[in-house]
Amino acid sequence: MQLAFVLYKYFPFGGLQRDFLRIALECRKRGHRIRVYTLSWQGEIPDGFDVRIAPVKAWFNHHKYAKFQSWWQADSAREPVDRVVGFNKMPGLDVYYAADACYEDKVQGQRSALARMSGRYRHFAAYEKAVFAPESATQILMISALQQPLFEKHYGTQPQRFHLLPPGISRDRKAPPNAGEIRAIFRREFKLADTDLLVLQIGSGFKTKGLDRSLKALASLPDALRKRVKMLVIGQDEPRPFLLQIKVLGLDAQVEILKGRDDIPRFLLGADLLIHPAYNENTGTVLLEALVAGLPVLVTDICGYAHYIGEAEAGLVLESPFAQPALNRALAGMLQNSSQRRIWAENALKYAEDADLYSMPERAADVVLQ
Image (tube, rainbow, N blue to C red; front, side, top):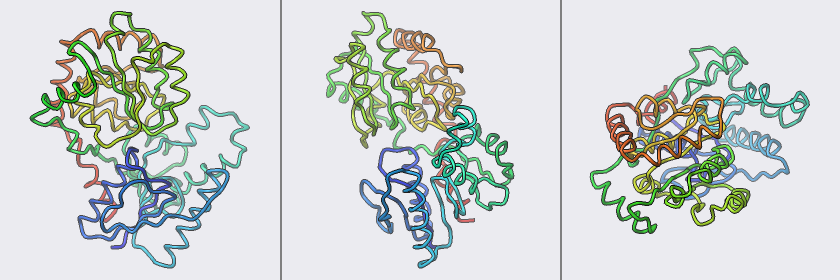
């Protein structure tokens, strides 16, 4: 079959983008042709992928997305495809990969009535409705069980259209037999002494991921402990607001922000803790990447994948509503307790052997090709 995959932008370090790539590669592996419609593509193009970049521009994103919608639909009408798989909400999809939370629920819970009168709201609400309304035939790939009741509540979506997928962690994130050696080399490279503690925060979208919360927690540590801590932040985002916060909090010598990169597994093996106090997070792939690497995690329960950390007993899950003092105490306690960190790491590695955390691309391809 000729398959069309549609997403607004591709870059190698986004969770949605990596999921798209794994699913598309699985479909290609099964002998199907892959065409990609997108507004931008960063990085290498896999062999056999026909990537078509939309020549559209607009001042506002929702205007640009509407132009993009018209463009890819016109192109696919000229050169027909058998299935259209979307990774952003839009009309005309046969299959939608639900990486994003319910927009209507978010707007009704957080925005004013005035916001619901804007052109931006009307665009995104209409595009979400095109996927989830009962009259739509779009099959929905769910990666968070928490979101299905919200879509059903707002749209009356038929339950049989939802397909809950297991996670799809790449197996190269698992701790290899020489994990200790990789850790030692990594820590020498970053000039970390045996008594130093490395905290990681990984993910594009620093504001959504709660980087401001992490920095406040780091600044709250007792002086003797704080001096032993180094924090590395990795992701594709504008760092300037957080660099200012780092300066104000006096953390210049301890925190470094790095751009997205493709050698994340060695960071996970070299660190002592992953912190992820997100404001909202449909899933949180990095939580499971840390788990299978044996890295303890401190996370807010708002994240769709946070329950895996609790089930594995691989760290701490902070309950809602969020409270900064609770995060501060949890971070200090986890960093001070090396024996408990070892237990969490052992629990994580055992869980990674027994649980299905890897088969998302295969299960998604089953639905796409059915």
